Length: 347
Ligand code: NAD
Ligand code: DAU
Image 1 (cartoon, rainbow, N blue to C red):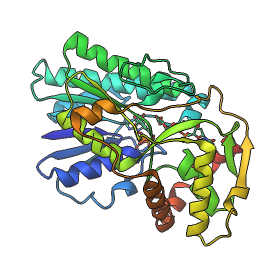
Image 2 (cartoon, rainbow, N blue to C red):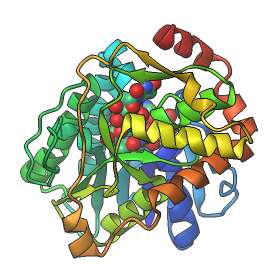
Image 3 (tube, rainbow, N blue to C red):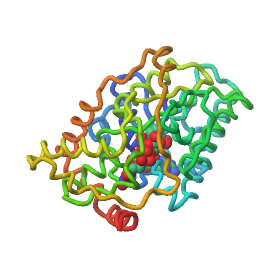
Image 4 (cartoon, helix red, strand yellow):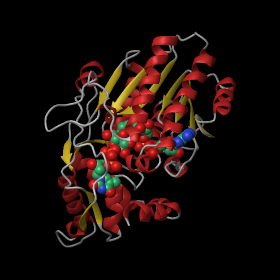
């Protein structure tokens, strides 16, 4: 099987690629990535020598390049993760999200449709999406696969649009697809613009911890390796044209999560109790900030037998250990452009 993974040098993509090249030596895995600020080949250096791994540097927005790629290689499946993924950046530059998340996805759909030219048996286009397409929950309720789309940020609007295109290609051209919508991931190789790795890095550096608004926003956190396992399962066993919600059964208000993280960091760094908590600084809220996300993952649990394998406490401990043991990686990704980004967003 020739399998194209897009965005495989990013956070979740690198865990997916690692899992696939290791567990399926009989597959040939092609990792297509533009290597934006979020893409980093260091994320895969433990597996990049494996004979079934290939890296292709390229941009999914470049239509000719994508068509040419699908002409050169007969892909049996696509697992599409490449995206602009950070909500705060989408508020600054929505068009970048339109280009990659919408136009890039449609380019891939067109290329797959053309290359597979109606011979769809044993082909599959797997689109990796987010729970943010459903908008915000109030204090009660959970997102199910039937929840109406109601995106609130340019990021989630672009992901919602790409989901609609994937479904439309299924209806209109019979393209075999599957979509998953997952909650917040955390774990190793997470770029430190997102809450957990940003705060780990700031605690290490004794910098302020910028909590948006009152900190009472809620997210449902999932360890990234559990997401990669769900993607593997859905790609191989999920039903055609279905959506699967993936979540951690693990809701945390930001401020409670941050206080737990501070405690873990104090312990690991041999600092006095509550030393890191003193860094907590309430800052201006994110515009259009969604109050709460929480997933009902019953469908994937009942149909495919998936459930998270790592508790939040275990996952957070593993994550903190990884960042403390990989200070070179952290130093590398926080040099250069990151400093500019940080001062623009947080000054
Ligand atoms: P990420 O930002 O860490 O990685 C994105 C990757 O895509 C990077 O390697 C980047 O170089 C690549 N990329 C960006 N633009 C590209 C382009 N035009 N052409 C080719 N490659 C390009 O993102 P992530 O957090 O790993 O998320 C991966 C996917 O999972 C995204 O589609 C995202 O919407 C979805 N998702 C993320 C989360 C989460 O909590 N991080 C949760 C649910 C769903
Ligand atoms: O729900 C899935 C989504 O989770 C993915 O689709 C996105 O790609 C991913 O980035 C993530 O989106 P969030 O906006 O929920 O993640 P983020 O880490 O940016 O923020 C988590 C919460 O923490 C959110 O309520 C905003 C808050 N926050 C974030 C940052 C970066 C802060 O309070 N301060 C910060 O500095």
